[in-house]
Image (cartoon, rainbow, N blue to C red; front, side):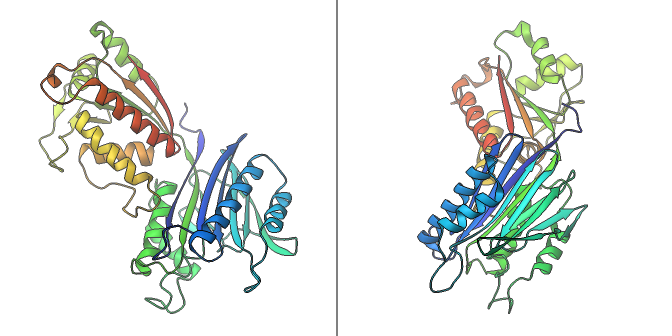
Length: 389
């Protein structure tokens, strides 16, 4: 894999209206051919009815668009399928649709949601939108030509209503949202991290009691980054050198988990293993250092904490930051795997660790940790390969 290949990543965060069990917004994503389609639909009102309407809208649109059905036909189907509210005279569901490939080519369609934000060269900007008339409704279309690091942010109207009647008189204006993003987005932030960042700011303006369903979704184009992760020694000790050479082959970041694995890599590389005596977190063993290896950590205990962090990272309602400032092994590894990596290769040795024979840790537990973690990484949109030895 070359360092110039581009890929797409996306993520979203959703806040339920205060007192509601279901969110009236829905985000759906799917792939078709070279393209990834992301739909954010906002159902009229809140609660069960809004949830059903937004779910229908997002699923129908995502399925049709990803199957290369003409965009006008897709929108016509939605507009005709969901009638207009008799009392308010507005559509039962609004929506934003992003359809783009890994070259950044695609389109953005918007119907009655707040105007999408284009993040380009470190600043927020407006898209050059073209109005279309479909079934008597005004829909906006934008041709996309995204570059490395560009992001498209779409949102429900809970964002621009944030703080209304509380901290702000007239809600959070779009230009204020853009200024906040300009100040807050840091280089390398993932799409999921940015979506959470904006949703958390809205939640603060609502004083933790959202007056409306509030959803932010982001699509980002970025360079691929491969991460190889070695966990445990191979069953056949004579294969150590071959096993490590496979792990070290290729570009990208290298991570070693486990004391025995670290010693093997240290020996094969002819580089000393230096253990840190810092304990940033008392529940996570300290990290080590091997020249040529990006991160060296303890094994099972670190992976357990990593799994906990992955569950929080995946939660679309969890507003804790998606990047980690702590320096313990699990947090450092979470940043590499969740925020930086696009492709992850596990090298899992199945040898029984003699040091674990008196502890409630066995090879089955380690394999189960790897299996669950692999599933969570795939839910994040990572491409994952697992090699057992």
